[in-house]
Amino acid sequence: NGLGICLMVMLLTGQRRHRPAQLADGKIFAWICRLCLLLCLLEVAGFLLDGRQFSGARSAAMGCNVLLFMLGTLPAYLWVCCLNSHLGRRQRLFAVLPAAVVMVLSVANLFADVFFGITADNVYYRGPLAWFPYVVTVGYLIGGAVLIKLRQRRTGRYIYMPISAFLLPVYLGIVLQLLFYGLSFIWGAAALGLTSLYISLQSELAFRDPLTNLYNRSFLLHYIHNQKKKVTLTGILLDVNSFKAINDTFGHQKGDCILQAVAHMLLEAATDKTVAVVRYGGDEFVVLMMDDNQEQTQLFRQRLDLYLDQYNHTQGATTPISLSAGVARIELGTGASELFFQEMDRKMYEDKAAFYQRMQEDVVCVDEWY
Image (spheres, rainbow, N blue to C red):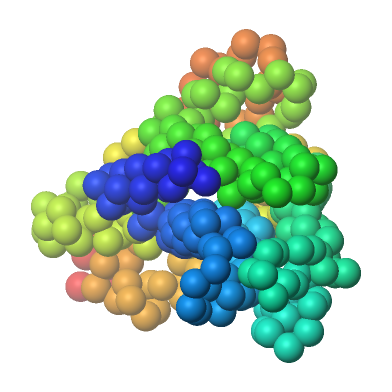
């Protein structure tokens, strides 16, 4: 627990300095660390109070252990919330029910020996349902792992969330604490798992674009060059038309707002077959999709056009957004990435040239009318 306290203080201090918790899942991760720190402190206090004979010692021990069981399943529940946020899924209200049941039974422990009991000599002992919070915790952890695996298998979407780095130490800590009564392993092991997960999340920040929060070009190249499975993907390269004119006319701050709006629309338009949405550079974006059939690409384009129309009729009345697109296919593992990017780039510039040609024709038509 002393090790766990030191690790959690270091993580929370590091988060305050580097601010990776600006993302929703990062904020939830910070709360998991805070809870882990508190639980380490409570368990230390519970062990120090065990068997002590002084006024108020038994009440203090009872309070520490009730809080331990009340809060003990919350980090695992928040882990599932963190994964849902990371995957862009909605939080399910029923998911909190097991943790809520544990909290209610923990309060009931003040009146009956549910999870634990304390003798008249202030000695702690396990109650008949001491196993239940462990089962709930393991259930949440397994549920989170299954959630990621199913998401990856169903959509092929790349998920930068190393499950084993966090789960293996926690599982080991739970097993050891159940087997060796009187020794504390769980929260120290959880602190180790959270530390390894924090390192992984820090690594992910190198793959994130700070302006749009999309994956960046480094991630795209890493994903394509390190994908071991032979998978065929469709790539859509999108470029904001007349973006330089927007920056020159309205300023770079407005240009940043345009890029953020495009990023939001691309994420909203993403289908279940979307693998990743990437800010490729400047005003260019790449959307990777599983190459099941051409209808998926058309569905994405239709959804994106709908969001563009909505934006241009509301927020974009003064600076409407239009995008040029180039589509190409790649079979990962064949080393054809250069041709893939060249093909997307060529088709995108063809689409952009057609866009400017249409604009020029419209101007000529207006001049002739006058």
